[in-house]
View 1 (cartoon, one colour):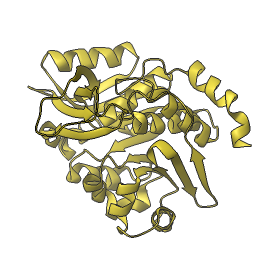
View 2 (tube, rainbow, N blue to C red; view 1 turned 90 degrees about the vertical axis):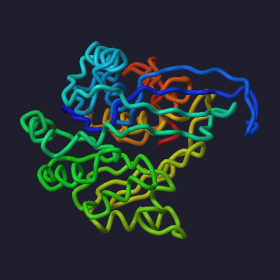
View 3 (tube, rainbow, N blue to C red; view 1 turned 30 degrees about the horizontal axis):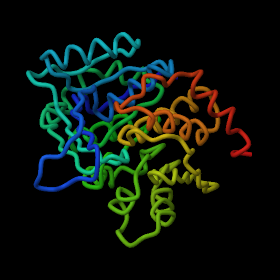
Length: 299
């Protein structure tokens, strides 16, 4: 299975606090820089999992963008898209327990990924067996992809409560939807139970819904069953890349025709053990080892 990821690519500036935040004051901590972007993170995870992958996005022509592109190519991820002057930036402040306190997204360059740019890469899109979209994409571009390539197997990452609303009219085109609790409420209604929101998505044509529940794990809903999957007990360093790894785990399982839940769980467990958006330790061997270790939990 060849996967095409269409989405955001940026540099992550991550500030980790040493203790509880004191607002309005200077807080001791550490600031690191990593490659980031929801789409790019998923593409890197897939590359490290040895799933044939291409990435389509906006990449800056500056030193950050050049390094970002070089790293993906070293992982045998084909890189397509538009070059801009400046690489997008995401900045996060992470509390001592690894949970993100606040993030700032400077993703204006994503607006340059227009339907016309997508059309320039139509041949690559048609060759893909699965297309992964993150909702950082401009609404017009998402609309164009859904309407033009709706027959493809489309996977969607909601990204945020505000951005997931863009796909509301196109749920019938979505094969696999990965969202958080807040995103589920944004799609359906605030007071709804998660299961109710997922069922609403399924009735509108989504084949599978994965709802990330943070430290609790995730819930999987499809046309036949619903399953709660408890998170593995691991030493958490940073949770910000867990959702991107979870989606990569789903795609890895689909590529090998395996049940997705154990692989989604294993991939996210590996992700939270790293300060960067992608844990470079993720690999087919690592993910298969975790699935084997916890096999009894899925019987």
